[in-house]
Image (cartoon, rainbow, N blue to C red; front, side, top):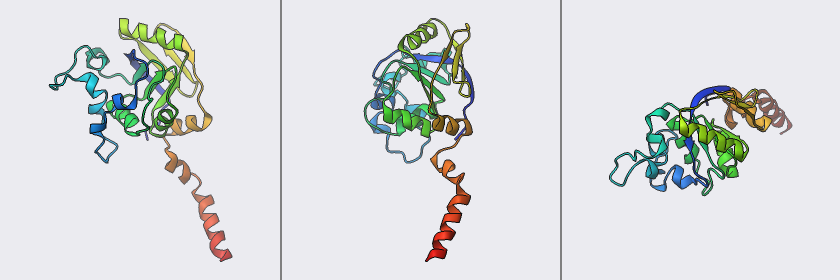
Length: 197
């Protein structure tokens, strides 16, 4: 995974509550076995009309947000089924950070396991960010090491994250990479076990 420390980007304001994983990546796009290639299906039924043409009113089709790496949404983001394809689609599209007041627990864990930083801020703070982002492109600086979010106007917010997940994201480790850090201990244990037989 790609390490995350500092991300500076215009935010994408998705001003919706209870966005479930079927809206993030619809079930008909889950047939792929790779982790890549899902970005083009992110929020597909919101991004496109039934004839396949872009829905110009949907925020991801606004050219001001085309290179955004920070998605801001309302409460209970990632609810619904536990499909890991949802964070795959978010990451493949280009978002490295998601900010919301709350997340479904499984979705939150799937994010950090796949290299996305999910930040919880207070509802009022998220609402303020959404309003600023809807008025004009609004740049945020996210600093994982300092656990801070700072807007281009100087507004600053702090967030909490479990030290375990923080270390994994800072180093770009998935759980397999983390296990490999203990390779010498694993080998010593295996040798000891073989000698005892």
